[in-house]
Amino acid sequence: MTTGWIIAFGLATLLVAGLSLYLGRLLRLLQQQKQQQQADVQKKNAYLFESIDLIARAMQEGQCELSEGALRIWVLLDHLQLGQKPEARTQYPALFQMYEVVKDMPTHQARKERDKKEIRHLDHIRQQAEINLKDAILADVGTLLDWLKKAA
Image (tube, rainbow, N blue to C red; front, side, top):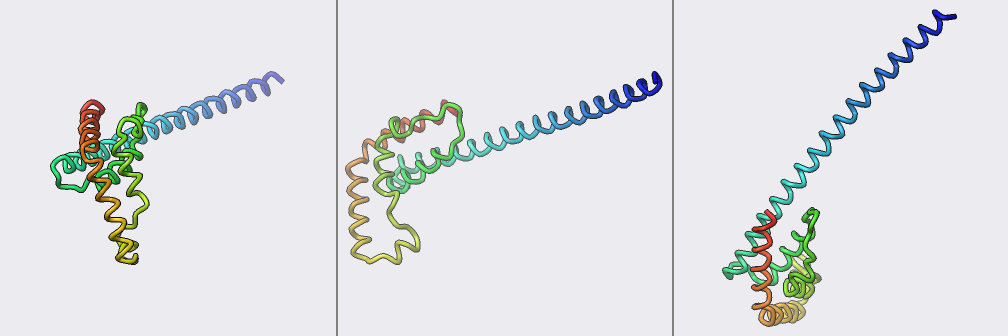
């Protein structure tokens, strides 16, 4: 019986060693996967930072309509994956207000399919909001650019 116990103990030891090696391999793969995910998030955030910066500067220089810039920036801010993400509604209230005005307005093909009178009315609403919020939006854009410098 001692020989049987020795063989059983030997097989059990081999089994535990094999499972330990397999577990170690799985943990290493998991760690590599997490590192790859972090690198992907950093790469995506860098792209988003660059895009936000480009749009914000274009808004400051008058190369991009304030409504279009606010809409695009808002969507990009929403996609950022940060531990300390700014509360955009309170930190950039004019951008948020402009986004709220234009977010449901039709674009591209949907705009072409609408009645011209309705489109003129929507354009008037958008243009009035741009006029009324211009200074506040540009101030928000400056604040956003300052934040981007610190966060990047």
